Length: 479
Ligand SMILES: Nc1ncnc2c1ncn2[C@@H]1O[C@H](COP(=O)(O)OP(=O)(O)OP(=O)(O)O)[C@@H](O)[C@H]1O
Ligand SMILES: [Mg+2]
Image 1 (spheres, helix red, strand yellow):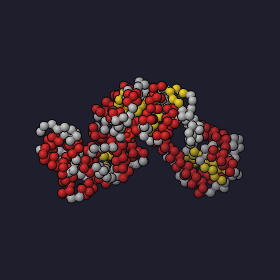
Image 2: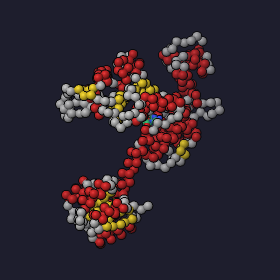
Image 3: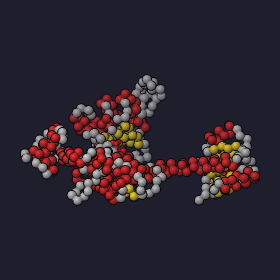
């Protein structure tokens, strides 16, 4: 459908000329003589754009503009004036006019202004759509038993006010879990404030979390609120909590114990009502044992633990996730629909994804933007280097290769391996390393897995310099 432009001008000639110009430029054009009529007309039949004269009988252009935008804040308006004054232009812009043009108006100037306004309007729409659709970022995809368990835990814990410690490798979706808890809680209309504990310099953490009064320290030129206060009535999410310094931990512990905070340099204590969620990709019990994390704080935070499993432990979710992420990126970039070939999905399912869903997301984004064909196949994966980052593990994903299935090696990986002899060596090395990982460093078990005897495996371990700390990490069972 052609975009509609409403022209508002008391001069008949102008109305006629503008209508003609705009029609020949591909728009539908209508016109009225006064501001009042414009308002009435817009109420009856919305227009994509209003071209509005400043000087009008009755209510003037600026006031009309004000009224239009009051009713319809997104309405695009271009002001036209025969008596160009900077002051009017400024006032019009302040009222939200998109452009201001002076009479006499050339055909070109009018067309360009209208086209720009339409483009701007489309862009604005697009941005709003995207931010609406931002919801799709919150969707938690996955039907694996592991994900169903995570969902069940969220449902159980969200309505309570209990503190939750979300643990999981990087990129597994910890933040998504935290947001889901907030959304499913009675605090969903309150703020959700995320604090990245790893990113705040030690000397600033206190003021960042609890706020500071003006002049509390050098550089504190204004008082600041602090994240705890911002989260009042809602949820505070302490992300990467395992990376907080011991000093900061003491401060946080106090705030959690007392339920109140004190600004840096302030004297009053402020009560805050918030729920605390925390996440970490570290193993906090280990950190506690090593003296890097306060045990008392650990117990305070870990009332309800939720463990988010790594992607390699829920490979059955990869298919759904890949499709979901692909749709999301195609959408976000305004690209045409595309889909995955079954072989491509199989390949994605075989990779180990040490960066978990974030890494899968990056790979899919690359495919969405760079991949050529409508159906994304193995060649596209190769061309976009998906899986190349991990020549060994990816290609030789141990569990994935069955005897009659060809190895999912990319050309790039083969090339990089540098010839058959080197490749064979590499292959052996990766198999051994994987088997050792799998068996937790137990050489006998790894040898069984590899179908060779233990002495032979020992030799190979030495030859491949797979160091003995892995093989001697666990006591060996008698062969
Ligand atoms: N189950 C899921 N369904 C859909 N998208 C997901 C899912 N899990 C994670 N994602 C997406 O993967 C990305 C990483 O998730 P998120 O930031 O929550 O992970 P994280 O565990 O906090 O990672 P990090 O440790 O790196 O901070 C986000 O873009 C998120 O939207
Ligand atoms: Mg995170």
